Length: 365
Ligand SMILES: *Cc1c(COP(=O)(O)O)cnc(C)c1O
Image (cartoon, rainbow, N blue to C red; front, side):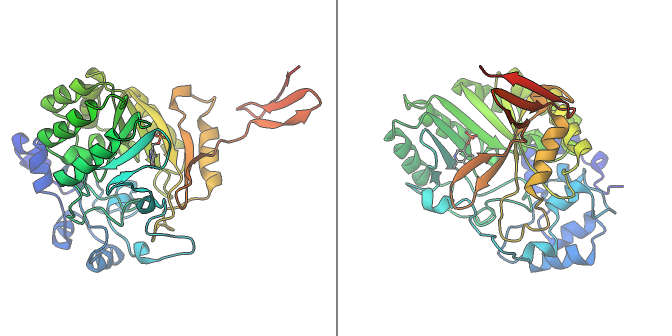
């Protein structure tokens, strides 16, 4: 049972994304009103200090279970003291992003694409955030002078044909600020595609307004990378938001972080991937959870992700199968970790094992 009495909130407010942001749960008092907290959750919120803040939109709060601390979505949004436990190999900046910024906020790891961090604010703060070191700090990340330097750097780098706008959450910027950025990026001749990386359809679907998509569609080819975690996020409101995006001709790909006890079982993963297809979102990446400080309680062995891919491939629509990726610590980039269907070689023959485990042979010459 849930205590956000959304029926008591006028729809005019509930459906207003700015009202949702103004009314985010950000402290212990707000959280106590919402959930029956465990001692562990309570002391974690107490101890947060300057670490990754608490942030839950009323919309998301309405999806949380008041009594069950093991509910998947609750675990991803409500802090636990496990976040303070640092284990071997964990880093504040696991992807070495800070060393790959030609100018502040622009991460250039690969030859022809850049990651542009345009804000450090989010609608909700995921407890497994890869950028926990920098988000929610009210820093100067979205200041115009800083954006302009990044745009100038992209304009001066003809190799860059793909700009991935991320953060933080780019879609909590106003339409005007977003358009300021998009117009300048679109004016650069060598920028072929622009991508926006967002969790808004899952946590603040009210943000996907008609004026927003009307503005976005002026900057085609524009794609959306949408962060989804669990099938519980696939609500009617989320479906409406995705339909609006798809109807504006904006292709959507999903990114999901594999999380222990949240989405690491075959049934949950399949429901999420098939649900995304119904919302016209192509499952893109399943990410091995980065080794950020305090992430041990969320991380699974790599074998789990491979098994999940095996449970999908062949058993359902091929579109539903994402690629399983591990972002190499220190800035090595993403490495695909595919389950192997090649059992070996026998002379000129490749020995294959299909999704049912049956052996087949293919003669190469
Ligand atoms: C993930 C990532 C990208 C985008 O990678 P794709 O595989 O093209 O989606 C770009 N830059 C950085 C630094 C990244 O981490």
